[in-house]
Figure: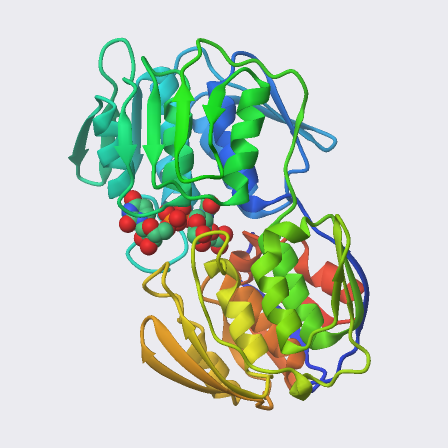
Length: 431
Ligand code: EPU
């Protein structure tokens, strides 16, 4: 990671020039919780298909900070959880990655204590942790807060099974509590759970090691505790639907022909439906998505409106790239961001590039398209907005730059290499 690196992008001025195949990596938001869940196992846990992104490096550091032995051999990452741990999460890592909060579940569940600061990460709004704290308390834990540190202690004998209703659907709270309940005393029932495919994948992985988790992928998850988990076969992380969706949107705007491989199209159904209705020529197979676009200028795509929503609704993590898409379509689109408070932070830069966008309030914008975009110097505010800026810069006329590349590196492996292979004019430079 180097915060002084930037991307230099030469835009194609709206022409569709990209061509080729791209293979999607393992999902960041499945890899990070799976690594955290390794703490629950007796003995070694092997994980394959981890994405080569900096957040995976951060989770390795975090696991090491609670005493886990982590190692990498070829493409297989291994974790050996410690038999005992004081449960103190690295303050430095926790403060730079929101996903650090997921590790609180396995650590508290196994060692009876966890100490951590308020997690940091992408600034997408307030990002509270009340759902986690309230749920741990329901399982009998005592939460104290002193200065920047939270200390959570399980009762003697470990967390107690409980019935928990999440007042807001939360992906990481669902995951952390599902993990915390695996070794608890008594059954846990979680209500109003998030239903993202990563959650079902995690439950399947733990169940393969002996856990008894039912209903993951539905709003109600029941966890019957077990004494031990033991891995039988290495886990392989499922494909990243957000990375695939990002390439799909990029391909719709910029590619003549693009084949997206190692993807589960079913996980992107809403995105595919919207793009198809807009006129993007998409076909799917069981594990690939193909765009054959050579006859369609962007201005023949129709605009549409959407609201971000928990799965299977439109993912908030693809809102920024889709906004860029809609700057190129014919007509008016209204976008409602319902998941986070501050996820239109990239819009002013698109307006400066020439997009016609009205920001009504922090949750609602209207776009009028199509607009011709002009290259600018851009500074990515978070992982997904950074990717949206890459798409905008590739569409624009002229040469632009994007800094804060370290944020893009948190979620996308070798982004400039993979785009260059498709014919994009994009380079990483030091400033
Ligand atoms: N919320 C609370 N209290 C809590 C936790 C969450 O009010 O204790 C609220 C949040 O403020 C938000 C809503 O619940 O308004 C939903 O947030 P959620 O907790 O589901 O988000 P998250 O679990 O922190 C995960 C992904 C995000 C993705 C969101 C929504 C991981 C590691 N992160 O975050 O991914 O945007 O779900 O799908 O899985 C990204 O990859 O760039 C990213 C930000």
